Length: 382
Image (cartoon, rainbow, N blue to C red; front, top):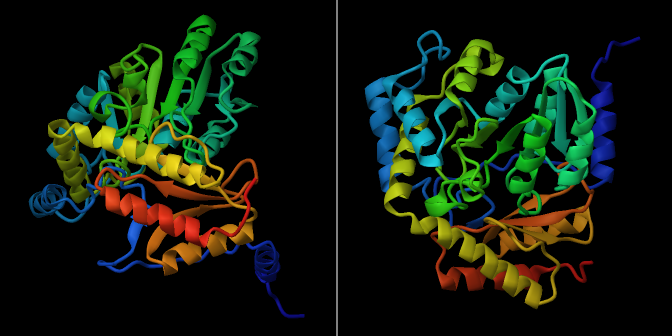
């Protein structure tokens, strides 16, 4: 009998193909004529000359890589500079930079909880939060989406350490969490609040300072934020922001900080360049939100079903996973790149096109994008 330990992979592949859930890599060229409503480059900064120049200068000065973990050789003066400016911009006491937003969420969830802890997690949270809950080895209660009363009930009978965790803006539908209400529930229960502000930074709050700043919660003693540098700031990496003692604790206990190679200097430089540009041009944040509202208004007026955006994500429902894939492909063929969300990426099983508004889109481009989505629509969407 032949030994074929991976034959099960072929069975899995056939099942995915039958359900229309096959995913493929599509390397993009450096230059393309496609209009981009698929990436998370909300402020249009990933190719801004100041941002790319800052990345190049950082690489020339500090080298192509961090050369080691942050606690060995991977911390540079540039990392510390970015951490100071991120904390100041977002309204927190301190910040710690990681190699990705995913790593930042794993760090915060595993280092701030433990065996005797309770994590209360929104059902719509990002996969990095789901994985962080699994790795934390704490008891986890998954509560209905955006439901502060459900969080209150979950916290009520737990006598020990507890932490509620939520996205600030949910990546599937683009709706915002009720942060003020959640913070009130956490204060009543003596629990910490952890907010992933990946989709809020650069779009929400005064000048793009984020959802926690907009809610008046930035810098709170019981509040910790995670964020990514790969969306509005057009770079790569992530960060945790919070009280200084929380950040010191992460330096000493967070495994994705201690054992991971530090963020490459070029990414640090790009993020710092983008942050400084946003400080000078705060109107970019409002423009991204305005484009999202306009996309939503035009698409729903034409009969499509979409969730009103609270930030820069516009989610348009498709009849099925197969039709969503075909719709996205037809948009691409017509010159428009859009995202396609389908199971298992969508917690409710409803497939969608995901459009990301960009601050640098002109009115003509917005009109063209809307026309393309409408002309390629597969049919009635409920």
